[in-house]
Length: 115
Image (cartoon, rainbow, N blue to C red; front, side):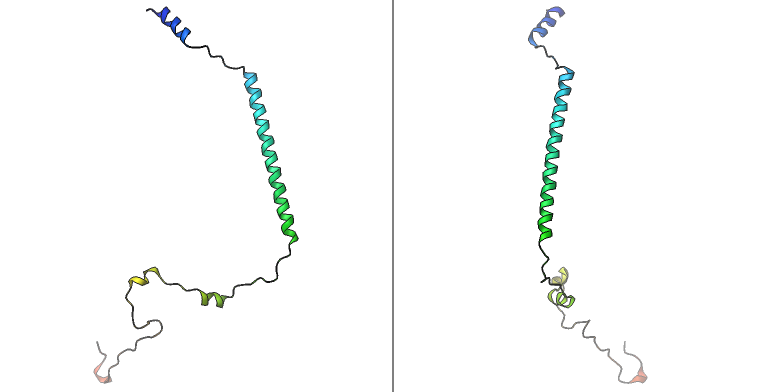
């Protein structure tokens, strides 16, 4: 088999592929772009209309007069916090912040401080 036979065999086995004309491809791309722009414009206008309707409906309702504000004292009484590591510490019988221990004083002031 020589090069001529090989070339003719390849030409016969592979179909000819022709590309479409540039003008036709460009026209299809422009048409697709315009359709997508119209679709996005329609969706944007529908969203704006829906937002305007929601705003108009919310403007019509008067605010309620029974608004309850949270008082600071009520908030401090209803919440508490403990450290996560508190369960790992042993429980003490005295609270150092509330019950300060008394210092041991010497009974005889002439002898000096106890060490």
